[in-house]
Length: 231
Image 1 (cartoon, rainbow, N blue to C red):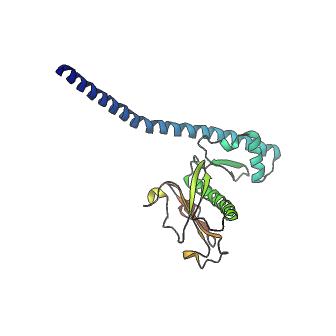
Image 2 (tube, rainbow, N blue to C red):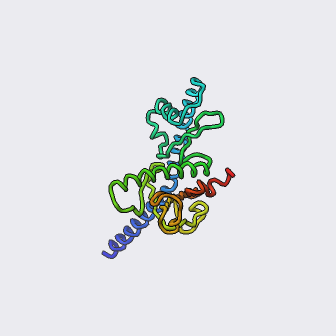
Image 3 (cartoon, rainbow, N blue to C red):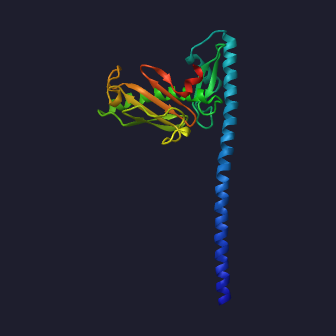
């Protein structure tokens, strides 16, 4: 009986050790799998953007004229019918006109130029915020404290504030902030009470990712470290 008890105790110890090993292997494997998935998604995005870029070049050479952004979007719809899914990670695809007049497709998640990514995402986030605010105001008499938009395939909460935020760089370099954040202020409220813009309109907007930030003010346009290289 004593021997059976000892064997039972050993079996339980072995089972616990095996369970710990499985957990440790899982802890090690998850980051590796995530890194592999991210690399695969970026590679697929780069290849898809190359196809989109080739289509835009061919269209430009066939027409020999500088079309509008809408024309370029229409061309992408012909070249890549599933344009909304160009980036497998859900990155928003922007069209930026190059010096030669040809539009360049840029992914909001995978573009190599980090400051350009921030600028494009910030501008798009502000547009989506303005649209979301218009919809929210039609359905409610009270001003929302925050508005959720979707950017790069992920929800982003734009938080209403009464004063400018202390962000000067990306969230990775600023205590108290993490990941991608967005804040906005309305004319006539808090520190924006004396703003010259029409009361209730957005007079301040800030968007920051881990690397850089972009700040918009109605009287100063876009600034922030994402724009420093342009000056």
